[in-house]
Image (cartoon, rainbow, N blue to C red; front, top):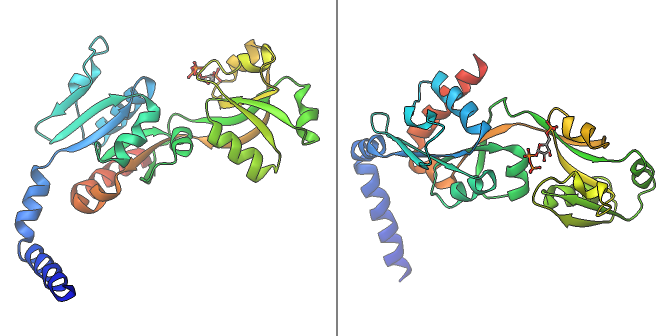
Length: 241
Ligand code: PRP
């Protein structure tokens, strides 16, 4: 049985080695599927991809409710999804490539390759709250932390601050947490700082900087190596230009 397996493996590998040109041709004919994060990141991503020479005019139509867009000429297929779903589509291979924030990539912790920092969508992941909460942080008190990012919050407090906390998962408008005394502090993204300011809260500690990243499915990275490497390289040049 072992011998049979060995022969089979050799036959498969010999077979694939014997037809490289067909494999290359197939790769050229295949679509690259790219998952984009709905909203502002999608427009910034398309603007960057345009500078790299990849287009999809249909995607510019803001009134459209369409979710999948195809560029037949360049064999590219784009779809729009909620940010936290982008790493899921990429891990399962429904998309070869995805673009979303590093906050989401950290929080979702999917098995994907992170290949490029796109240098936009910049903001900070912070611990924020009323000034009075500084003392609670300083003394490593047991506190309640509200966040859309429970994994990031846990990692920060448990592994970096060595502080035990009670995490409360919220789905938006997290700033409400300390204001209505649901939580002592929040862990959330801060871009301009105006949401915090307008609600009487401050940045108390910075967890990490955030920006948009490109991620790639691990199998596609091998099976569509040529196309994906070229795609990354052109986008990288556009980022650095
Ligand atoms: C994000 C974040 C903050 C706000 C920060 O919320 O959760 O609330 O933006 O931006 P700023 O520093 O420029 O004010 P988002 O707009 O995604 O809405 P949400 O709170 O409903 O998730």
